[in-house]
Every structure is written in C-alpha cells, then in structure tokens.
Image 1 (cartoon, rainbow, N blue to C red):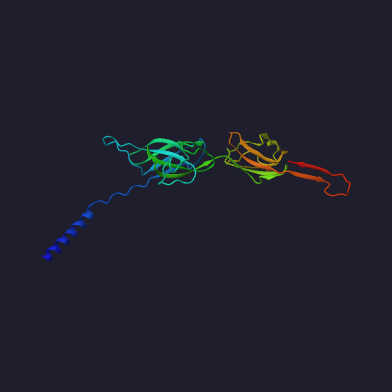
Image 2: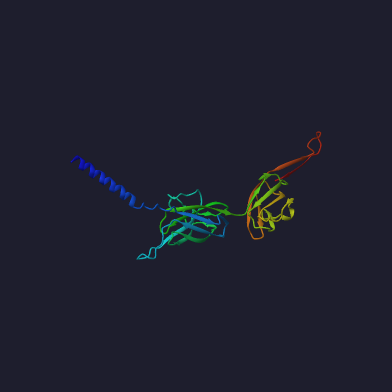
Length: 263
C-alpha cells in the first residue's frame, strides 16, 4: 500500500512537470513607449508622436476593436505613468483626441506646439524650456507613456543688469531666426543705430552678441528688447542706478564746484 501511494505521487509529479513544459508561457505585456520627431521646436511648429506597445485594434472581432489614445503637452515637473491628467497634472494642453492605434499596437500622429497650456486648472504661457508629451488611452486620464520635448524660443541675456547711465551692456541672443537683421529697443525707443560694437544681424544659427550703452534715463527698471525681421523677440530688464558727479573732486574753501547727476 505504501509503495502504491509513493508510485501515485511520483506519477502525478511527472505529469505536472510535463504539463508545465507543454503549456506556453503567458506573453509579457509590451512596454508602452513614445518617440518624438523632432524632440524640439518653436511655438507653432509641428512634430510627430510615434507610439508602440499600446492595445491593438482588431477589425476581425465582432464588433471591431478600435484602440485610440489622447496626446497632451504638459508643463512643470516630469509626470509619471502613475499620474492622472486633470488630477495629478493640472497644467496641460490637449494636442490630439482619439488618435488611432493600428493592429500592431502602434500609432503616428502630427501635433502642433501650442502657445499656451490652458486645458487644465492652471493656465500657463508656453515659453522656452522643457515640457512633457503624455499619452493616455482615449477617455481615460491615466498617463501611459511620457517623452521630453524642448520648446525653443528667442532669448537674450545681459552680462550686467544694473548700473548708471552710460554703462556698456553686452547682449547675447540665442534661437532667433537665422541671418536676419535685429532691432534693439530701450523702453520702446529704437537704439539700433547706437550699437557700440558687435552684431546687428543674427548668425547662421540664430545667435548674436552685441554691446549697447545705456542711454539717458531715470533711476529704476528699464526694458531692453531685441526683435528680428520675422518678429521673434525677447526682453530683459536693466536697472539704472543714480550717479552723482562733482567736479572738481577737491579744492579750497570758497572754490566753485559743479555737481551733475544721472538717473
């Protein structure tokens, strides 16, 4: 009896091991990924979003299975695939509704870089910097894939942002349109003809370096604006400091002095 029991246990073990060998392993779920082409662009530019690993459409089913996704541009910190649009993520623009996914679980859609993110609770103008393209299933808020997108926009930097009238300020410009004349304004007054040195035209990569002298103006904040021919522009603030000059700076009692000031 004991031998028969051992034999039955061994037989069952052999059968189970054979079943394990015969039964196919469950297929692993494909990772959902998106690629952007290109990965950077200016406001108004178009780019492609390519998706892979999403639920497949199947026309052979009755009724046919139609798989669709939504595409968003998101501002702020990088979202994750455990976040929900309009809950965890509140600054976004809906770029594409109901993009079709094919029978291979892939999609490709062309979308446009918006000028503002205003489909969420928090509105935000799109400026130069890093944003995030997010994809959800259609009619579902859970983010399924994320990719980084860089918005390019004309920008200027000043090597010095405060000083008295007459201070020479170097302006460095990036991401303007290529090979275009620039206009430099100080509080809306064109001072391009007063450029001290450097470029009055952008290079082949949209950059320039030019130097201006701060014109006569009162103490406080003033706006320097650079614009190219196409209309791309950026501005920066320069703070004028008051300055008092006495001439001569030394003399005897009773001597006449001249005091002059700027700002």
